[in-house]
Length: 496
Picture 1 (tube, one colour):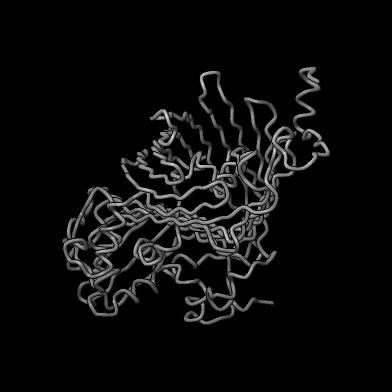
Picture 2: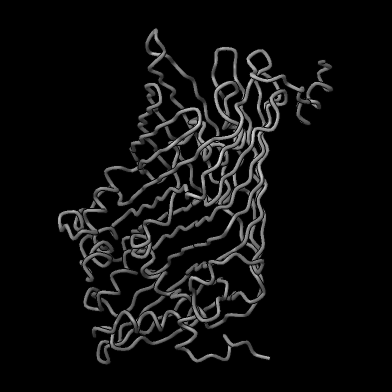
C-alpha cells in the first residue's frame, strides 16, 4: 500500500517536507530568525557549575565541607545559543530576514565563493545530581536536554538566483549551485557518574538515550541552469542526494513530544589529572553517538531536470522552491538510515592563581583545544575568569579553522549552594545582529568578517545535608565505602 506521503498531491508533499527547499535556499535566514534556539560555548569550563559537570563528566559539582549534597536546577532551563554566518551572503540574507527584500551587495558569479553557516543547540530542562559518597567522592546525576546541530555551505549564485535572472549575463552556467546543508535535532535523557579515584585523578561518564526529532540533509554535487529569457523561465538540472525523516502533515509542536520512533544513544567520557605543580589537565570525548531514523524516512539520489516559470515575477521564490523541491525529491524512497551526532574531542589545561594575600581575587585561566570527530571543524579557546568572593567575570576568546575569531563576556554569581550565570561568547556580533533585527540599516548592511549571535543563561541550587569530612562532621559518620572505580584502582596498585 502506498503511504500517505507518496499518494499526496505535490502541494501537500511540499508542506510535509517541513519547507526543505526553503531551508536549502534560505537556510541561514532561518538560522537568524531562530537565534534563540542554537548554541555552543566555552565559558563554563572549570566553573564547577551543575551545567559544567554534565557537559564535562569528570568535573565536580560539589565541594566537601562547603556545599550541600543535592544539586538541582528547579526545572529552570539552562541553555546557550550560538550561530554564525561567513562570506558574501551576510548582507543579502540580513536584508531578506529583517527587511523582507534582497540586496545583492557583494555576491559574485563563477568565482567559487561560498558562505558558511554553523549552529548548535543545547538546552537542559532537568539537571539533578547527588553527592553519594565522601570516601569514594562519587557523584550520580540525571538530566534531560534537547539539542540541535546544523551546518551549511552554499554558493553566492544560489542566493543571487532568488533576485532574478537579470543578474546573470549568459544563458548557460554549470556547477554554480553546488551546495550542502545538514540539520538534526533530538531529545537526550542522560545518567552520569563521576568519581575521584585518587588525589590527582578523577573519571566521569555520561550515558544517554537519544530520541530523534527532525533530520534533513541535502548534498548537491552537480548543477546546470539554462535561462529561457523569451519565456521568463529557467531550466534547472541538479544531481546529488537527499535524506530527511518524514513528518506527516509538516513539522509542528506535537513533533517535539519525545517518542521512540527515532531511537539512538551516545556517550561522553571525561578525565581530570592534577599535576604536581597544580595544573588540571582535562580530556573529554563528548557526545559520540548515533540516531536511527525510522523506515518512514526519505532517502534519494537524484539527477533530474525541471523548469521554473516566471522567474522575474514577484512569485519567483515560490516557483524556484517548487522546482528545486521536485528535483530533490524526484527519487525518494522510504527507507531507514542512521546519522551520527556531532561528537567532539577536547583537551584543556587549567591553573588557579590568588592575586592577593587575603585570597579574595582569583584568576583561573583555561586553554581549550576542541576537534569535531565526524567533521573538519576545530577550535582553540582561552577562558579567563576573574573571581572576587562570590562574583566572577569571564573574558573568553576563541579561534577556529574557518578563520573566525570570537570574544565574549560572562557574569556569574557562584556561592557554595547557589549559582547563576549569564553571558555571550560573541558579544559584538550579538549586539550587531540584535540591532539589525531592530531595523538598523547600518547593521543590516554591515559586511563583517562574520555575522552571528550567542547567548546563554543558567541557574541551579544545592540543598540537603552538608558534605562533611569526619573530623569536621556535625554528626557521627557511619563510614562510606570507596567507589567501584577506586576499589579497582587500589587493587591494581595494591593500596589499602
